[in-house]
Length: 132
Image (cartoon, rainbow, N blue to C red):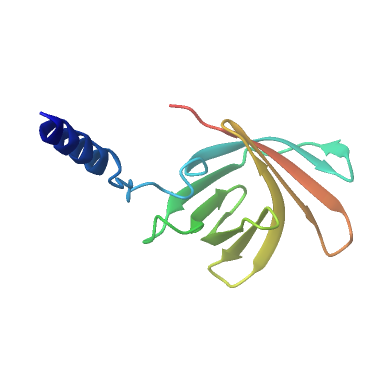
């Protein structure tokens, strides 16, 4: 009886300790989807914002912190992005090889992107995720 109990405990322990990783988890799942520009400031002064939308999608590797984007404003810009998790930066590289780095803050429904332009102006965009 003791041997049977011991075998059951060992078997239960082995099966409860197996590693079952979800290999389909996206590193950027919270970012993926449609976003609309809610507000924009330059040097902490509000400016009128146009109808702008930003779409993030996965690339071929869902376990990294990069993907594709499309910005729709007066014109359309697209390319890829990479997230630097150490410094909370998101780096956009357009299809014409223009790179812009933003400091970002992200929660479930909003995202703030901030950068300093060539003139030294601090531009801050607040985006809201579009919920279907």
